[in-house]
Image 1 (cartoon, rainbow, N blue to C red):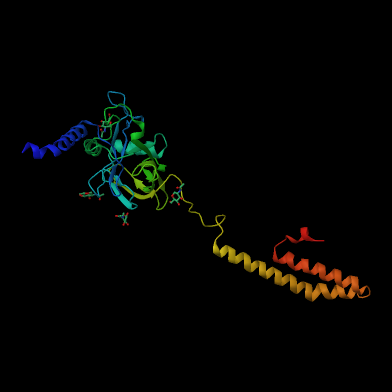
Image 2: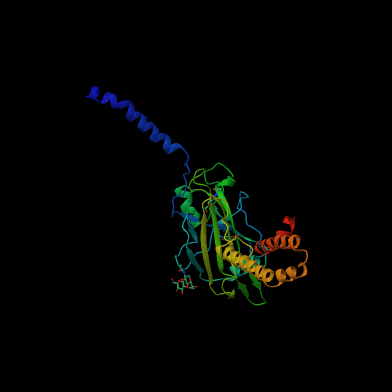
Length: 299
Ligand SMILES: *[C@@H]1O[C@H](CO)[C@@H](O)[C@H](O)[C@H]1NC(C)=O
Ligand SMILES: *[C@@H]1O[C@H](CO)[C@@H](O)[C@H](O)[C@H]1NC(C)=O
Ligand SMILES: *[C@@H]1O[C@H](CO)[C@@H](O)[C@H](O)[C@H]1NC(C)=O
Ligand SMILES: *[C@@H]1O[C@H](CO)[C@@H](O)[C@H](O)[C@H]1NC(C)=O
């Protein structure tokens, strides 16, 4: 019996040793998979001054983003998924209203962050319930564990109420797949004035509308094709047509007016005059056609 087991015994021991090692080793962070949820947590701030709050150990206190009425969960992103996400914060209580005043009045930013790579399962659960901690793996401060995402919420402050631009763009850059797959490189969010700003008083709900877009590296694609941007096909066609039209006008002018006049005035001095005249005329047409490159070519 033992004889027959002997060949596989070292293998199974190796297997068990590997298992034990895996159990002891700290969680190895792999990248996000497409569609994986990413918790968003934000700095807790005092409502008196908008100052950030630190815990007993002096660490900044990050709490989950506000709970969305649509999902019953704090706002979250999905890795690599571009979509519009509605997140209505159901009830603006007094403290939240004061914080909104700080954000809109630029006294303090809405400072949020997302884990750069997936958090270990235990920390992930905590992230949704209590917020994210800096010492997730007990190794002290790990600044690269999170990617900051400042939410630039804009609006205007009135005496009794606020106007908040509640439509926001969210841009998230992933690190290039070839360098660090499933890793977040940078993120930002900002209000856009798509709809008129929402009027807010205490007790209202805050209807946040996020448009999330993802980029596969840290360079932004160029999106501008209008005036002053790239040469578009219609611009090219327009240039060609106007070049052709000006050439035709020059030709007509030369044939109909200029040439007969020159022929008349240089009638006596025949040979030299006509030759000179047609020579200039050739450049004249070229001038019209190429929009003013002519003078340099003159003999
Ligand atoms: C944020 O800080 C305030 C003041 O310290 C505290 O009362 C509140 O519970 C904190 N929020 C969360 C979600 O922990
Ligand atoms: C939020 O959800 C609750 C129950 O799910 C509902 O009663 C309430 O009207 C909703 N609020 C908004 C602003 O949609
Ligand atoms: C979000 O809410 C707006 C109305 O404010 C609605 O038109 C839109 O369809 C909603 N989008 C999603 C993805 O639920
Ligand atoms: C970044 O990604 C874009 C696609 O959005 C691609 O066109 C571009 O070549 C990439 N740039 C680099 C430096 O890899």
